[in-house]
Length: 64
Image 1 (cartoon, rainbow, N blue to C red):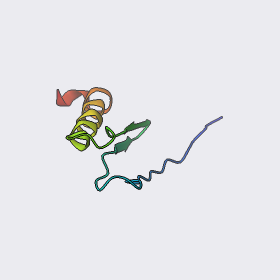
Image 2: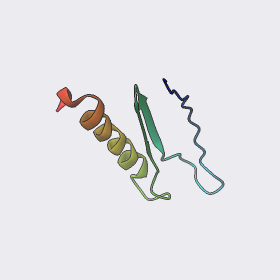
Image 3: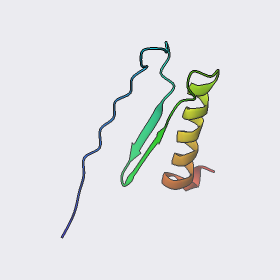
Image 4: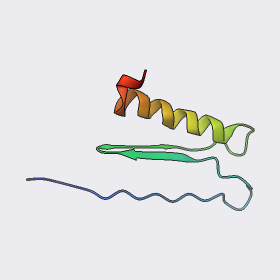
């Protein structure tokens, strides 16, 4: 038996923020979500770096 699933994504700045700091990525057999830092300076950079690191380590290990 083969199981499968569909992945989708949506983000929202919410009612208090001007910038969405959340990041996400998908690859075959892999999904990662990094929540922002509650409006703290650099939150969008931190979540983006976290997602990129996960992709590098688990999806494209030859990119080290």
